[in-house]
Length: 290
Image (tube, rainbow, N blue to C red; front, side, top):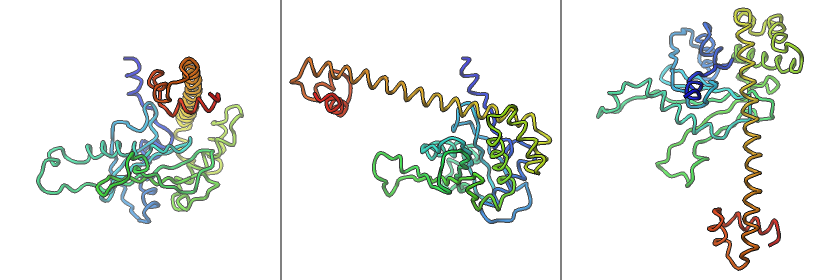
């Protein structure tokens, strides 16, 4: 029960606050939308925020969705390695978004129900080298080849690191300043009070100055939580790999003992007795030369 309560309390990232929660969020979203589509909307009321139950992350919210001009956009920001499962998560996410946008009764009409066109973007802001742009497709995860009636979902991944100088950063001032701020925080990493120093420096340089003046302490708390979350994910990934190696060694040991005790059994018979795949038996035989 305690874990369930914790999972319902999602912490917002700095990206989510800047583009979804803050008093300037609609203005920032409109600027980003215009930059993505080469439009010149001025009225912030064209932005309609979409609230969805969280499906991309359990305890940390780093994604937003909104509707504008017949389109529903799902945006996420990553500071860790780009996850190839993002399209699948976005599929679940947009389904929840449509539940909020389309009246329930409309689903049962006999006439065609018009729905906003979905678009998916992930902004990569991590330290590992990634392409300037890449496209992730849901069909890459399909077990069988894509058929004529198969669904498809594409996510455009844009590298927003300042040194990559993506064209989008030139078109959207707020996204460029956000990227510059993250760069500044990293430049001070390892120093005492690194985030506070980065905030003061960016205010002096005019980077997110008004926002940081208003919410400096909140920004500090958000970044501490964000980086702690990233570190936690990395630790869990390392632990999973280590556990996997340990389980692999134990399995190899069981296969080895079974093969030695029953040298006339086939790989399939060994696999059935040990409880593994024949390929794992074959791999163990090659490893030990048995």
